[in-house]
Length: 463
Ligand SMILES: *Cc1c(COP(=O)(O)O)cnc(C)c1O
Image 1 (cartoon, rainbow, N blue to C red):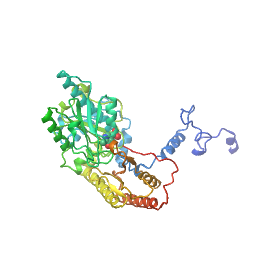
Image 2 (image 1 turned 90 degrees about the vertical axis):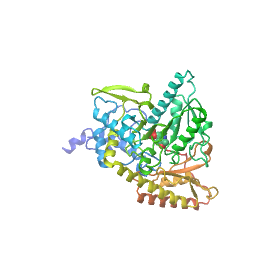
Image 3 (image 1 turned 90 degrees about the horizontal axis):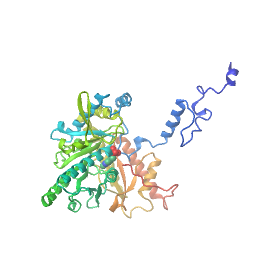
Image 4 (image 1 turned 120 degrees about the vertical axis):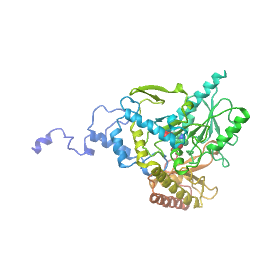
């Protein structure tokens, strides 16, 4: 019997995965292979390639969730086949989306959460673009009604905006006007705003949680400055708040800070459900303060269940599972749970910032007390031969991803390093990280010459 079997073609079903003739080793890199593979072989190959990515939990560069509990995973597996756009087929998921929009509108203190318009999106980028488009359309409609030209819209924002705003301006042909940040004005704070706005300004973007550093922009001060400008010039300029990260921090950690719909000039707000909303990647939200703030001609009405559902999105099909996961978390955590989780991340961030700020080589840019994110830079003239890029490399050897990158425009000479504390970076892990930072700094300080390089280091910046 044994001999008979050996004479046959090798039985792939009993051969060990990594020892199967050709299968595991001969896939073309950039072409679809001609033949089929056994599922377990293909699985193993893909699994092994993904294994070469960094460890998501040690990735302190990203804002995006890397941990959810087991029930969330079960729910995800049950729901990953749902298409958000199929509101007819999945009316329950559509209804959950509507509930979430109202919950978020209420969280952001909308006067009447039931009168708001909003939608889920694939992330803050899509959500922000919808907010930008609505401002552009409102501005255009008003200009047309007044018989004025509409060919030169502009949008005013900090030079430290996330790239989605540069994309918005590029894709939708709006002139971006960047207000530079500086050591004195670390964020957009209204300073000299009158020099940037004019009759063609569709709006001002205020960021709750600047991506580069984690700092909040003072929405109320920006709004007060726009009030002054309106008094002087008659221009009534709306604010869109990019609260990609802060939208799920400020309501819980700084509930008295007025940055949301309590500020009248704020017409719309976006956030990332997949950042401090604590859902896995693929979820953003945008909400308008009331129905009037979102021009009706951007909304498509589709009928479902005998009713009419407003949809407003750049994408058509996209996963519905994340929306269910957001709803799960709202039920699972409630306000108290979100407060506990976010406060814990903030405590860890402030602890880490405090310790890193004590090290003689470093100066903190901020202390992690807004969103749980902080950045630091090298004190000029203190270190000998190393940069924050070298420190990032050394930390990478220990498994930690802690990016170093240049600040924007006028501050591009300044290199900072940033830590994003997310749910899952415990005090214990943070203490280990600190030990590794100290070890890496000691190593770099001990070098006689510049840090030898194996390969050139390129700045890395995960938004
Ligand atoms: C992350 C981020 C974005 C983009 O969000 P995505 O959800 O990744 O599309 C936009 N603005 C700010 C301030 C961000 O931090």
